[in-house]
Length: 150
Image 1 (cartoon, rainbow, N blue to C red):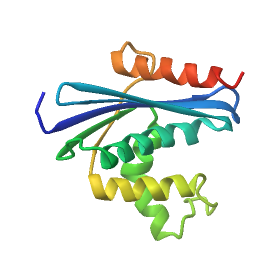
Image 2 (tube, one colour):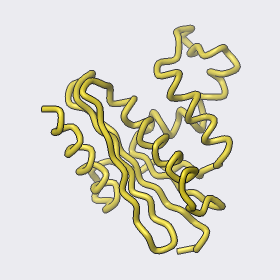
Image 3 (spheres, rainbow, N blue to C red):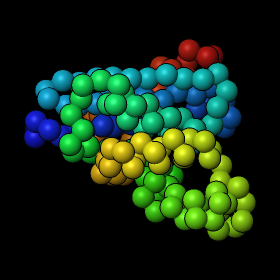
């Protein structure tokens, strides 16, 4: 692995929508692995997916972790497409969608946009439940977080 490269896998989910939810991230850098997770008693799947990437990027900023090259992996097309394709249009339109409705989870998107502008990660989508080791680990961590609220 490139010593300056940091690889992040994230996942988020909830039981019911809204319902008890969890988010998780695995950060791989300089031969080290960091695992982060958290949850909420009543949330949505999309909020947890967004929170996973936000918390991972905030962790990089709060700790002495290489940021020269960040590779972000999410199984959420909502997050991946939102940050790479949709957010700039939402901003230009005053945080409304093409259907002229307010953007859901605006506060999360605003925070993520700021982190994306500062850290400039490469955004990658990975298929969920397809055998990717770190995606599966994140999924298990999310499930453990959700169960805390049962």
